[in-house]
Image (cartoon, rainbow, N blue to C red; front, side, top):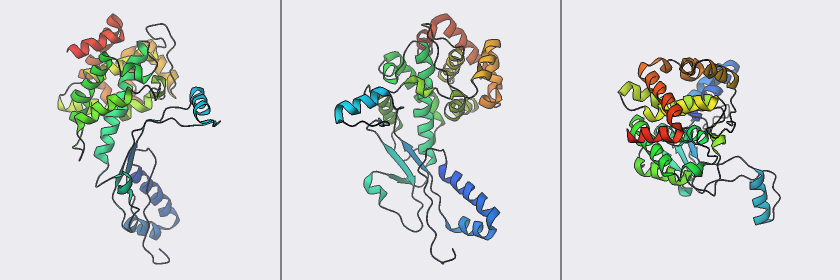
Length: 311
């Protein structure tokens, strides 16, 4: 500003929803306290494009380290295993020019939010949908459940009947093909992604990924039975044991509170405002959750899934 040259662009490359908005608010908040005129200049001249990234990268394990050592002769203490798929969507808001990102596969768009909602409600929410029920049924890996016809039908039902109706149009994306691609990605045995990784801090993930779908479907009168079974599966998962007697791999900053609630009254989980806000008081959700809990108790995870598919 002092030199009188054009402002640059602040481009966020993290995995935070609305990352450009977050960066702008943080920087302007700081600048306002240091130099209000500078804050006004930033607001007028600096661009903060949002971006979205998508690539499944499981936690590094000893098996990953051993594979790198065996195949490449490299002793790497922290290799990163990743799928071949990669997607980077970036708002084309660069007033002073930009590198030719489009030449290397970056999708440059006017608005990232439709793509971000697609990823959150289809990919991330599907991870939640498969993981609690998969763990309860005795599975450990993502590819185990995503090459199982029963789970595939359940995930496709969730995506098509509950998630997609809540999305805005996503320019250039065929959502049916995207869902098929997700199932193929999830089914890759080479990634060896664990269900346990998907459920870390579920009390933070469910409100971001699955509950917005539930809320939108309740508002429109749409289906919620897939999502209700996932929430019921989470509540059973919190009780601490799978159907095969294994201890559930529960890691959550609110775990003590959550386990105390479900031990006392599983229905009271919907009253836990840090996760559910006010949506847990919706009568239709409460009845669907109660019925899903009963179905899990009577038929187990696979039986309960089969009944949702049959409906």
